Image (cartoon, rainbow, N blue to C red):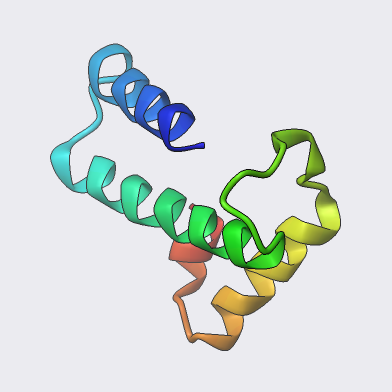
Length: 75
């Protein structure tokens, strides 16, 4: 999963020319999601195809419970 995150961040940096702050925000978000998935699946070696709508909603619920701003959650 980490390689996918790095590739996506490179895409945002080089193809979309996103700002440093935006890239850092996306990086933090994606690594947080990766940690959530590793805990959820009880393994760091999970298949991307195992991520479904329920899993994503659980993650978003965790963000809401942690008092993340609506703007951060939407991002």
